Length: 248
Ligand SMILES: NC(=O)c1ccc[n+]([C@@H]2O[C@H](COP(=O)([O-])OP(=O)(O)OC[C@H]3O[C@@H](n4cnc5c(N)ncnc54)[C@H](O)[C@@H]3O)[C@@H](O)[C@H]2O)c1
Image (cartoon, rainbow, N blue to C red; front, side):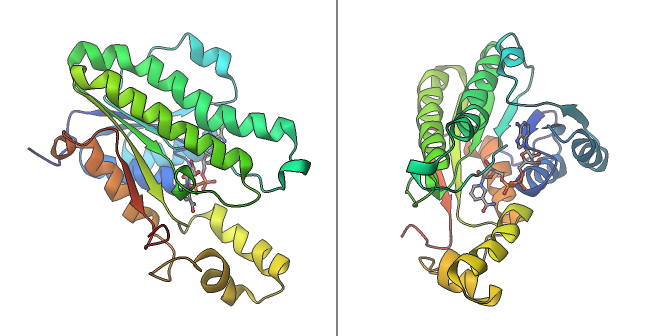
């Protein structure tokens, strides 16, 4: 049993930044060839060049293009995601649909496209970037929480169907991670709560955390790389929380 990903082809969606680029680096460092997919083509190309892989400019909202797709990858990381924060009664229906499309329907279509190759070779790894919001709710995040809960279900069904074919499927569930997305929210939260930015982490985002710091992207990426390896062959249908005790 080895942690090496040598000889494996990995596709990482949302790979241009944040958790996606950290994941691309982590799996490439263990020997995988990485396809960095993102709607940000230039960002994806930069990460691909860095890790010696290739980029794929891909908008996951274009689901019709994904319906006829076939993928010959050994590792699929469904990572791309967006956020909209609003009370349900004001939630823009188009924004709700966008989140469900990018974060649930597109992962389904990519899993669907990847499984035939994985089944044919008797090996595959599906890793879905869920969240603590795949397991718990927060106010004003109806679309995000719904999409992540749905992704948890998709991941478990994939685990059930894939088990006989050597394909595992798991979720990774980070708490607040130090990415541009979250760093941008610090200023918004400070304004909304009327407190200095220095207090946002402790009093808002990390109020429920046992460990009062953000998760680092590299920490999550290391978990993804392990789940992609042979060492995790018996891990499937699972959801691995990395949240400093937020959900404890
Ligand atoms: N940052 C956190 O605290 C945190 C915590 C838990 C889970 N997550 C999850 O991790 C994943 C990555 O989040 P992040 O913080 O790195 O965000 P990010 O905004 O830094 O990166 C998201 C990437 O997805 C890409 N993307 C967005 N819409 C797309 C589309 N339609 N088609 C293709 N690519 C698209 C963006 O271009 C970007 O490169 C998301 O699924 C998010 O829900 C993040």
